[in-house]
Length: 156
Image (cartoon, rainbow, N blue to C red; front, side, top):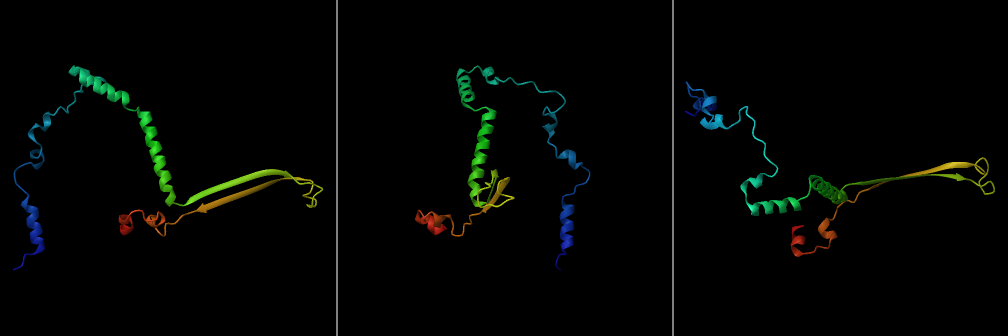
């Protein structure tokens, strides 16, 4: 007789059950309650905690590290600059949109070929341009670069 799948599943479910013990408390290791996570506050740590060791070499190494490391503002500025450079380099593969507009006030001569009411009057003349540019990569970067290196040509 072949075993019924429900019987196997039922047997699997009841295999882990034990009677008479509380499983929630028995899974906590015995020393976990004494880790110092109670209501007492931890002592404040000094900004120059390494001086407590009394090691001159450690003091000089940490002073060198702190002197040569950037401030948080400088590190954030470097990060923003790197992100902007990454965005600029990735922008090549995305559509480019640009817009330009110009507005000029011009007086039309009354002695030129433009007849009245425009001849001899002053008007605003405006132009607006919008450009959408997208360079699609049909041939691939390796072909555009001339396949520098045989491995690059074979893998592309």
